[in-house]
Length: 225
Image (cartoon, rainbow, N blue to C red; front, side, top):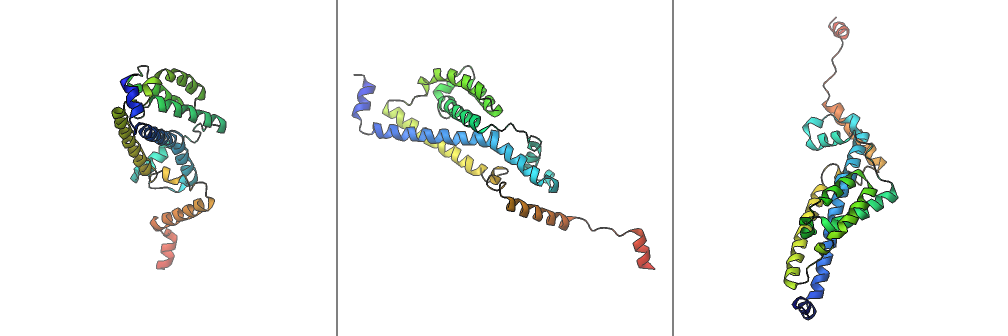
């Protein structure tokens, strides 16, 4: 019996620690997948929908960086949204490759990825190319061994703590993104009453800040006479 196997079988905390490390890894994969969805698909779609609803009423683009970003994205209203079935397949494949090759999830596998499979996966996912994602998943499976959690309990503890720290960082990043444009609108753009109220408010602001209308020259002469 090897020393590693003996240590795994004898140490009473190994099974519990392995379960905890797997849970942290799953949570990290989920958070990174959500972030990719937001940045590559949902975010541009939300921004385009916002500008389709309010673009004719906004006059402060130059003074607001987040609005300049939204205005730049707005012309991409044909942002290749995936069909429901294709979208589910693409997301599942992307998440599988993410779990095997993302530098934060599997740093040893990422270091062994000399072909740049992870970068190619990101490009395919941004384009919604499910067929290309399937090809890359088949190639990424050769790195599965390097992506496994360590068996040695000391290394496993270290990996658990690293995964927990990485997951906490991504969770904080998602929390910050959720408060920024256009991510803070994800639950509002489907609400027709909210859109109507916002448009009414913007019209009132425009009327308030608009310069006073000048009277015509004929009206001025009539008032003087």
